[in-house]
Image 1 (tube, rainbow, N blue to C red):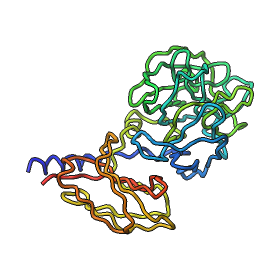
Image 2 (cartoon, rainbow, N blue to C red):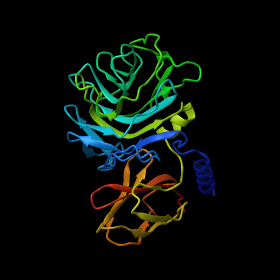
Image 3 (tube, helix red, strand yellow):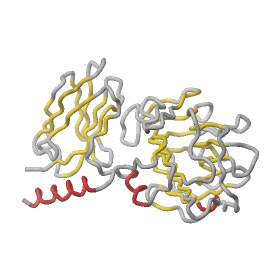
Image 4 (cartoon, one colour):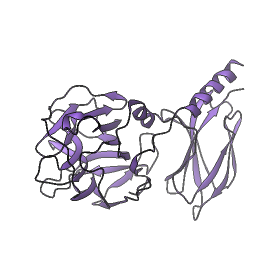
Amino acid sequence: MKKLIFAICCFLCLICNAQPPSSGLVAFYQLDGDGLDQSNSANDMTPFGSPTYTEDRFGNKNSACYFDGNDDYFVANSVGPLGGTSRTISFWASIDLEFNNDGFAVISYGGENTSGYRFEIGFNKSCKSLYTDVINEFGAKPINYHNGSWHLYTVIFDASSSNNLTNITYYQDTSIISSFCMTPGSISINTQNDYPLHLGRLFLASNPRFFKGKLDEVRIYNRALTASEVQSIYSPTSVSSEPLLHNHSFKIYPNPSRNSLYISDFRTSGDNHYSVKIVSLTGKVLIELESTQSNIELSLSDQLSTGLYYAIIQNENSLEVYKQRFMFIED
Protein backbone atom coordinates (compact mmCIF):
# COMPACT_ATOMS: atom_id res chain seq x y z
CA MET A 1 0.00 0.00 0.00
CA LYS A 2 2.85 2.41 0.79
CA LYS A 3 4.33 1.80 -2.66
CA LEU A 4 0.96 2.49 -4.25
CA ILE A 5 0.47 5.73 -2.31
CA PHE A 6 4.02 6.84 -3.19
CA ALA A 7 3.44 6.06 -6.86
CA ILE A 8 0.13 7.91 -6.95
CA CYS A 9 1.72 10.97 -5.32
CA CYS A 10 4.56 10.91 -7.85
CA PHE A 11 2.13 10.54 -10.71
CA LEU A 12 -0.02 13.44 -9.50
CA CYS A 13 3.07 15.62 -9.18
CA LEU A 14 4.07 14.57 -12.66
CA ILE A 15 0.85 15.66 -14.32
CA CYS A 16 0.69 18.89 -12.31
CA ASN A 17 4.14 20.09 -13.31
CA ALA A 18 4.75 21.86 -16.57
CA GLN A 19 6.35 20.89 -19.83
CA PRO A 20 8.99 23.20 -21.31
CA PRO A 21 7.01 26.39 -22.04
CA SER A 22 5.51 26.89 -25.50
CA SER A 23 4.26 30.46 -25.00
CA GLY A 24 6.48 32.82 -26.97
CA LEU A 25 8.46 29.99 -28.56
CA VAL A 26 9.61 31.31 -31.96
CA ALA A 27 12.15 28.59 -32.81
CA PHE A 28 12.91 25.08 -31.56
CA TYR A 29 15.63 22.92 -33.08
CA GLN A 30 15.79 19.38 -31.73
CA LEU A 31 18.69 18.51 -34.05
CA ASP A 32 17.48 14.92 -34.29
CA GLY A 33 18.78 14.30 -37.77
CA ASP A 34 17.82 17.63 -39.33
CA GLY A 35 17.65 21.40 -38.81
CA LEU A 36 13.86 21.69 -38.91
CA ASP A 37 12.13 24.22 -36.68
CA GLN A 38 9.65 22.37 -34.45
CA SER A 39 7.85 25.58 -33.43
CA ASN A 40 5.10 27.15 -35.53
CA SER A 41 7.51 29.65 -37.12
CA ALA A 42 8.91 27.33 -39.83
CA ASN A 43 12.31 28.99 -39.42
CA ASP A 44 14.12 25.90 -40.71
CA MET A 45 17.91 25.73 -40.91
CA THR A 46 20.18 24.60 -43.75
CA PRO A 47 23.46 22.82 -42.84
CA PHE A 48 26.87 23.86 -44.19
CA GLY A 49 30.15 22.00 -43.86
CA SER A 50 29.40 18.58 -42.42
CA PRO A 51 27.71 18.78 -39.00
CA THR A 52 27.35 15.22 -37.71
CA TYR A 53 24.39 13.78 -35.83
CA THR A 54 25.53 11.98 -32.72
CA GLU A 55 24.45 10.77 -29.28
CA ASP A 56 22.57 13.13 -26.98
CA ARG A 57 23.01 13.41 -23.21
CA PHE A 58 20.93 10.23 -22.74
CA GLY A 59 23.02 8.19 -25.17
CA ASN A 60 20.36 8.21 -27.90
CA LYS A 61 21.95 7.99 -31.35
CA ASN A 62 21.41 10.71 -33.98
CA SER A 63 19.71 12.90 -31.37
CA ALA A 64 22.20 15.79 -31.09
CA CYS A 65 24.61 17.54 -33.46
CA TYR A 66 28.42 17.66 -33.39
CA PHE A 67 30.28 20.70 -34.82
CA ASP A 68 33.97 20.23 -35.67
CA GLY A 69 35.09 23.84 -35.12
CA ASN A 70 36.31 24.20 -38.70
CA ASP A 71 33.39 24.73 -41.07
CA ASP A 72 30.24 23.17 -39.58
CA TYR A 73 27.21 25.42 -39.07
CA PHE A 74 23.53 26.01 -39.89
CA VAL A 75 21.77 29.05 -41.31
CA ALA A 76 18.05 29.64 -40.70
CA ASN A 77 15.52 31.30 -42.99
CA SER A 78 15.22 34.40 -40.82
CA VAL A 79 16.33 36.10 -37.61
CA GLY A 80 15.39 35.88 -33.96
CA PRO A 81 13.79 38.60 -31.79
CA LEU A 82 14.80 42.07 -32.94
CA GLY A 83 15.34 45.59 -31.63
CA GLY A 84 15.38 45.96 -27.88
CA THR A 85 12.65 43.38 -27.23
CA SER A 86 12.83 40.69 -24.56
CA ARG A 87 14.11 37.25 -25.52
CA THR A 88 15.38 33.95 -24.14
CA ILE A 89 17.81 31.59 -25.85
CA SER A 90 18.31 28.16 -24.32
CA PHE A 91 20.35 25.17 -25.50
CA TRP A 92 22.06 22.01 -24.31
CA ALA A 93 25.78 21.92 -25.05
CA SER A 94 28.79 19.67 -24.56
CA ILE A 95 31.73 21.98 -25.22
CA ASP A 96 35.45 21.76 -25.79
CA LEU A 97 36.97 24.83 -24.15
CA GLU A 98 40.48 23.51 -24.85
CA PHE A 99 39.78 24.29 -28.49
CA ASN A 100 42.48 26.65 -29.82
CA ASN A 101 40.31 29.74 -30.14
CA ASP A 102 39.70 32.65 -27.78
CA GLY A 103 35.97 32.30 -28.25
CA PHE A 104 33.40 30.56 -30.39
CA ALA A 105 29.82 31.44 -31.18
CA VAL A 106 26.85 29.15 -30.61
CA ILE A 107 24.15 31.46 -31.96
CA SER A 108 24.35 34.77 -33.81
CA TYR A 109 22.16 37.03 -35.92
CA GLY A 110 21.51 40.73 -36.51
CA GLY A 111 23.65 43.54 -37.92
CA GLU A 112 27.25 44.70 -38.00
CA ASN A 113 29.45 47.80 -37.60
CA THR A 114 27.20 49.60 -35.10
CA SER A 115 27.18 48.94 -31.35
CA GLY A 116 24.11 47.07 -30.17
CA TYR A 117 23.15 45.75 -33.63
CA ARG A 118 24.33 42.14 -33.23
CA PHE A 119 23.11 39.45 -30.85
CA GLU A 120 25.65 36.68 -30.33
CA ILE A 121 25.93 34.02 -27.63
CA GLY A 122 28.97 31.81 -27.23
CA PHE A 123 31.79 30.57 -25.03
CA ASN A 124 35.03 32.40 -24.24
CA LYS A 125 38.24 30.46 -23.60
CA SER A 126 40.27 33.08 -21.75
CA CYS A 127 37.97 33.16 -18.73
CA LYS A 128 36.05 29.93 -19.42
CA SER A 129 32.73 31.72 -19.70
CA LEU A 130 29.37 32.10 -21.39
CA TYR A 131 29.12 35.45 -23.18
CA THR A 132 26.77 37.77 -25.05
CA ASP A 133 28.26 40.08 -27.69
CA VAL A 134 26.34 42.98 -29.27
CA ILE A 135 29.33 44.62 -31.09
CA ASN A 136 31.93 46.64 -29.17
CA GLU A 137 30.49 45.54 -25.84
CA PHE A 138 29.98 42.12 -24.35
CA GLY A 139 29.44 40.49 -20.99
CA ALA A 140 30.88 37.13 -19.91
CA LYS A 141 30.15 35.00 -16.86
CA PRO A 142 32.31 32.04 -15.78
CA ILE A 143 30.88 28.53 -16.03
CA ASN A 144 31.70 25.22 -14.35
CA TYR A 145 32.54 22.65 -16.99
CA HIS A 146 34.32 19.43 -17.82
CA ASN A 147 35.09 18.67 -21.44
CA GLY A 148 32.40 16.39 -22.82
CA SER A 149 29.85 17.03 -20.05
CA TRP A 150 26.36 18.20 -20.99
CA HIS A 151 24.83 21.35 -19.50
CA LEU A 152 21.81 23.50 -20.19
CA TYR A 153 22.72 27.14 -20.93
CA THR A 154 20.05 29.84 -20.88
CA VAL A 155 20.46 33.55 -21.66
CA ILE A 156 17.53 35.80 -20.73
CA PHE A 157 17.18 39.43 -21.79
CA ASP A 158 14.31 41.11 -19.96
CA ALA A 159 13.57 44.48 -21.56
CA SER A 160 10.67 45.31 -19.23
CA SER A 161 12.91 47.54 -17.10
CA SER A 162 15.77 48.35 -19.49
CA ASN A 163 17.13 47.36 -22.90
CA ASN A 164 20.70 47.61 -21.64
CA LEU A 165 23.21 44.80 -22.13
CA THR A 166 23.69 44.69 -18.36
CA ASN A 167 20.09 43.50 -18.01
CA ILE A 168 20.85 39.93 -19.14
CA THR A 169 20.60 36.91 -16.83
CA TYR A 170 22.75 33.83 -17.44
CA TYR A 171 21.93 30.30 -16.30
CA GLN A 172 23.96 27.12 -16.25
CA ASP A 173 21.50 24.27 -15.73
CA THR A 174 19.09 25.78 -13.15
CA SER A 175 21.54 28.09 -11.36
CA ILE A 176 22.01 31.77 -12.09
CA ILE A 177 25.63 32.66 -12.84
CA SER A 178 26.12 35.64 -10.55
CA SER A 179 29.61 37.06 -11.14
CA PHE A 180 31.18 38.53 -14.28
CA CYS A 181 34.65 37.70 -15.53
CA MET A 182 34.21 40.35 -18.22
CA THR A 183 31.86 43.12 -17.14
CA PRO A 184 29.70 44.64 -19.90
CA GLY A 185 29.55 48.33 -20.57
CA SER A 186 26.33 50.33 -20.65
CA ILE A 187 24.96 49.90 -24.17
CA SER A 188 21.44 49.46 -25.56
CA ILE A 189 20.53 46.25 -27.37
CA ASN A 190 19.07 47.08 -30.78
CA THR A 191 19.32 43.89 -32.85
CA GLN A 192 18.95 44.41 -36.59
CA ASN A 193 17.50 42.28 -39.40
CA ASP A 194 20.61 42.12 -41.64
CA TYR A 195 21.87 38.55 -41.08
CA PRO A 196 19.66 35.51 -40.38
CA LEU A 197 20.09 33.18 -37.44
CA HIS A 198 23.37 31.24 -37.56
CA LEU A 199 23.98 28.18 -35.37
CA GLY A 200 27.56 27.08 -34.77
CA ARG A 201 29.33 30.27 -35.84
CA LEU A 202 29.30 34.07 -35.96
CA PHE A 203 27.69 35.24 -39.21
CA LEU A 204 30.67 37.46 -40.18
CA ALA A 205 32.95 35.84 -42.79
CA SER A 206 35.97 37.76 -41.49
CA ASN A 207 35.77 36.20 -38.01
CA PRO A 208 33.35 33.24 -37.99
CA ARG A 209 34.31 31.88 -34.55
CA PHE A 210 33.20 28.32 -35.34
CA PHE A 211 31.82 26.33 -32.42
CA LYS A 212 33.40 23.01 -31.44
CA GLY A 213 31.30 20.55 -29.49
CA LYS A 214 27.78 19.16 -29.39
CA LEU A 215 24.47 21.04 -29.36
CA ASP A 216 20.93 19.85 -28.71
CA GLU A 217 17.42 21.23 -28.14
CA VAL A 218 17.96 24.86 -29.08
CA ARG A 219 15.00 27.05 -28.06
CA ILE A 220 14.37 30.73 -28.79
CA TYR A 221 11.58 32.72 -27.13
CA ASN A 222 10.35 36.26 -27.76
CA ARG A 223 9.98 36.87 -24.03
CA ALA A 224 11.92 36.52 -20.79
CA LEU A 225 11.41 33.14 -19.13
CA THR A 226 11.02 32.76 -15.38
CA ALA A 227 13.26 30.66 -13.15
CA SER A 228 10.59 27.96 -12.90
CA GLU A 229 10.34 27.83 -16.69
CA VAL A 230 14.10 27.33 -16.96
CA GLN A 231 13.68 24.50 -14.46
CA SER A 232 10.98 22.93 -16.63
CA ILE A 233 13.35 22.92 -19.64
CA TYR A 234 16.13 21.39 -17.56
CA SER A 235 13.92 18.68 -16.07
CA PRO A 236 10.54 18.46 -17.83
CA THR A 237 7.93 16.46 -15.92
CA SER A 238 5.00 16.10 -18.26
CA VAL A 239 3.42 12.69 -18.87
CA SER A 240 2.28 13.71 -22.34
CA SER A 241 3.67 11.79 -25.28
CA GLU A 242 6.22 13.43 -27.52
CA PRO A 243 5.87 12.39 -31.18
CA LEU A 244 9.11 13.52 -32.77
CA LEU A 245 8.29 12.59 -36.37
CA HIS A 246 4.83 13.11 -37.80
CA ASN A 247 4.70 9.86 -39.81
CA HIS A 248 4.89 7.70 -36.68
CA SER A 249 2.13 6.96 -34.22
CA PHE A 250 2.27 4.81 -31.09
CA LYS A 251 0.18 3.98 -28.06
CA ILE A 252 2.12 3.20 -24.89
CA TYR A 253 -0.04 1.94 -22.01
CA PRO A 254 -1.04 1.50 -19.25
CA ASN A 255 0.28 4.52 -17.40
CA PRO A 256 0.85 3.89 -14.49
CA SER A 257 2.05 0.39 -15.32
CA ARG A 258 2.50 -2.64 -13.04
CA ASN A 259 3.72 -5.81 -14.75
CA SER A 260 3.89 -5.04 -18.46
CA LEU A 261 4.02 -2.10 -20.83
CA TYR A 262 2.22 -2.41 -24.17
CA ILE A 263 3.22 -0.62 -27.35
CA SER A 264 0.73 -0.75 -30.21
CA ASP A 265 -0.51 0.95 -33.37
CA PHE A 266 2.95 1.27 -34.84
CA ARG A 267 2.49 2.93 -38.22
CA THR A 268 5.28 4.17 -40.46
CA SER A 269 6.06 4.86 -44.08
CA GLY A 270 9.03 2.55 -44.50
CA ASP A 271 10.79 1.33 -41.35
CA ASN A 272 11.32 -2.44 -41.20
CA HIS A 273 12.02 -2.56 -37.51
CA TYR A 274 12.38 -0.33 -34.49
CA SER A 275 13.96 -0.46 -31.05
CA VAL A 276 12.44 0.26 -27.68
CA LYS A 277 14.39 1.55 -24.68
CA ILE A 278 13.27 1.99 -21.10
CA VAL A 279 15.44 4.75 -19.64
CA SER A 280 15.75 6.24 -16.18
CA LEU A 281 15.24 9.97 -15.69
CA THR A 282 19.02 10.33 -15.45
CA GLY A 283 19.44 8.76 -18.90
CA LYS A 284 20.55 5.22 -17.95
CA VAL A 285 19.25 2.56 -20.37
CA LEU A 286 17.62 -0.18 -18.26
CA ILE A 287 15.81 -2.29 -20.89
CA GLU A 288 16.37 -2.43 -24.65
CA LEU A 289 14.92 -4.61 -27.40
CA GLU A 290 14.33 -4.60 -31.15
CA SER A 291 11.12 -5.63 -32.90
CA THR A 292 9.54 -5.93 -36.34
CA GLN A 293 6.06 -6.33 -34.86
CA SER A 294 3.43 -3.60 -34.80
CA ASN A 295 2.31 -4.60 -31.28
CA ILE A 296 4.55 -5.75 -28.45
CA GLU A 297 4.35 -6.50 -24.74
CA LEU A 298 7.32 -5.47 -22.65
CA SER A 299 7.66 -7.28 -19.32
CA LEU A 300 8.81 -4.93 -16.57
CA SER A 301 8.51 -7.21 -13.54
CA ASP A 302 11.77 -7.84 -11.69
CA GLN A 303 13.51 -5.24 -13.87
CA LEU A 304 12.25 -1.92 -12.50
CA SER A 305 11.48 -0.48 -9.09
CA THR A 306 8.64 1.92 -8.38
CA GLY A 307 9.32 5.23 -10.05
CA LEU A 308 9.23 7.31 -13.23
CA TYR A 309 10.84 6.29 -16.52
CA TYR A 310 11.06 7.13 -20.23
CA ALA A 311 9.84 4.80 -22.97
CA ILE A 312 11.86 5.76 -26.07
CA ILE A 313 11.32 4.39 -29.58
CA GLN A 314 13.93 4.62 -32.33
CA ASN A 315 13.54 3.71 -36.01
CA GLU A 316 15.87 1.47 -38.01
CA ASN A 317 18.25 4.40 -38.54
CA SER A 318 18.59 4.84 -34.74
CA LEU A 319 16.63 8.08 -34.97
CA GLU A 320 14.46 8.80 -31.92
CA VAL A 321 10.87 9.08 -33.14
CA TYR A 322 8.76 8.87 -29.98
CA LYS A 323 9.21 9.41 -26.26
CA GLN A 324 6.85 9.15 -23.31
CA ARG A 325 7.22 9.21 -19.56
CA PHE A 326 5.42 6.61 -17.52
CA MET A 327 5.03 5.44 -13.94
CA PHE A 328 5.92 1.88 -12.90
CA ILE A 329 4.48 0.45 -9.67
CA GLU A 330 5.93 -2.68 -8.07
CA ASP A 331 3.45 -5.28 -6.87
